[in-house]
Length: 403
Image 1 (cartoon, rainbow, N blue to C red):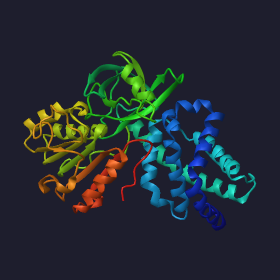
Image 2 (image 1 turned 45 degrees about the vertical axis):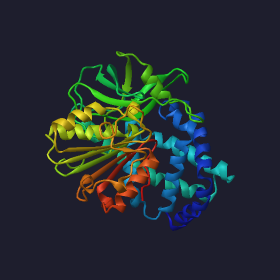
Image 3 (image 1 turned 60 degrees about the horizontal axis):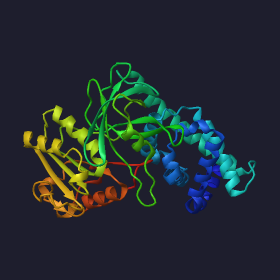
Image 4 (image 1 turned 180 degrees about the vertical axis):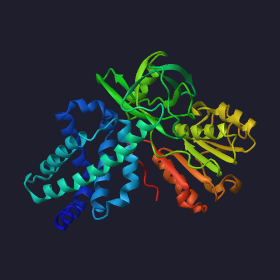
């Protein structure tokens, strides 16, 4: 990019701060209208809620703000690249995105496609697209070189369903071709794609693998997203819950950059709601290693009715004295027993927790809704936990800014 083009892109920062979501919302409507086949690549639930437009607006703004040194965005690029690979997004798709993005800028800002600003953003987008394409190629190459892994979509059958709570069901997925499965990292996720009758479309959704690598199945544990107030029901989660054992779905290979880093260190897992799924996978991975170091498993949810895998944790605690647990129920039921089912009523409060459960030398893993994530990160830093030891995974279309 020329210095003049960099300055033009930087000059759009105030516009992006003010109208970024309007621009990206317009862009998605334009692109999906012109390329309806992409509706089976992009999750229509995220389009309906506006989450995808908001995530893209944030990414475009961050890129414009850092256009002089995009390298500071590499951690975010890696995060998004894994998501793109899980959806089988390929290099030619970037041309479609670029064309529609540039036309959207022209149409929303009411400027000519010959305006120097469009040329500046074309150069900026080309630079960013090349970065994503090269990052994703490295991930695709890694999948090709990993025994049992695959590219694109692979057919799996639902071999077994296990109800874990009033909301969460585990799905044991076996490859229809009977082939090998990869030895993935505990904490990684897959995309599943199912046919949604209401949309007459196949729809993708990403779910964390909820156990350590197994020889003959993958497992996801899915919360059924019911309609609540202004929030519509989840198309993919409800479709999955309605499918019978033996049904076939499409699955992408395990990927993602949130996973257990060091099994030889002390580890602390902190989860909210269905955010416990990667924590269970990491904990189960440590179990396969006979839990070499003490582990703290902290979980927050509404009550025992929605507390998934409670018995599994109880059994592991009985078997491994090195495992310490702490559970907070925001709204305990009358039958929930303090000191047996849970240790604290109300919202999780790390500030008041026993220091023995939160050692400063441990690695910390957080997963849950974004407000929960930000609250726990702040509490940990306040307790003296180094920020570089805190690793996080957030639900939705992207990461969460924690500091």
